[in-house]
Image 1 (cartoon, rainbow, N blue to C red):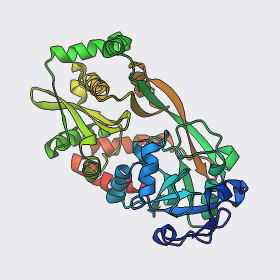
Image 2 (tube, rainbow, N blue to C red):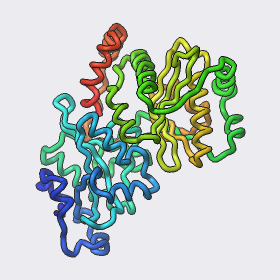
Image 3 (cartoon, rainbow, N blue to C red):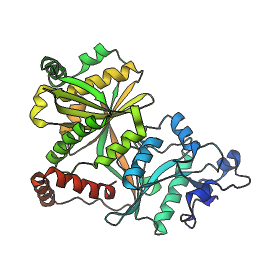
Image 4 (spheres, rainbow, N blue to C red):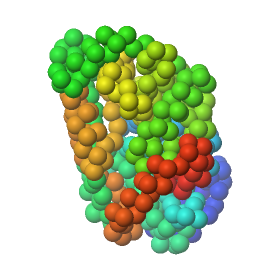
Length: 383
């Protein structure tokens, strides 16, 4: 069923009904001739509609966060319902789309998020005019009371204000070009903070391994719990990582280094098309002096190059965590601002310093099992 971009009355219809609908005369030429505000908008289920997979496989702005695997892991772990808005009629090839998850939380409200726990998620467009129709339709759902707010997390510089969204710029994205020869890349790394630490790891005879076995997951998760505690946060649910393994298979790897058989540092990477994505990292702080984390990144870079990948996406870094940004820049990565969009345009709320301090004290004093249980409860509300 076609949905007028300015109407909110169809939002409660099921995705399956809209996927099976047809409308006479909705060919591409007539759609492109429509005024922007009058374009029709359709919903589809990206987990069952093969057109979404085809778009993600070919669109230059598609990333690992658009994939069926990432969406299915979000749904399996947190119960989020993925949906796509597009101006392309049912059964026509997709040329534009925005993917969302419905986050239905008694704590944070019912929201449309593109996408939860994703560093970035670009609207996949063929021409800019489609964006106005898609965002107008999404806003109508908020105005009709179906959602509390909408959040969109692009990585490109676009004007959110034009579409009535509040821009929020409090993070950067670091990406490393891998097209240079490996030895040239190594020489470009910071000599003291990266090159010497990689050599230190070699002298310490740290043992490197990779895979996605249950044993490697548990080693990673032990280190993740330690790291999140240092940051004053509970770890993500263990079943989130199990869902990622099930969804990505060999395209997900835990990379670990061991000192005297004990895992002392680990990162989780995801592979998609020509890009390797660094998503999570963790370590035993007492062993950081051995250079385990730099060794892991160097192994990742070499493997990516061996597989013909030309970029390492090093992920989001918050502006209030300058140490993380500096670490990534020591590899020669290029930072670009991340500007997320929110509608309605309400000011962001920042917790008072005393609340953050109290939360950190509680986390630091809690046993691992308590932190892990807290993560199981809280993260589905935070997407």
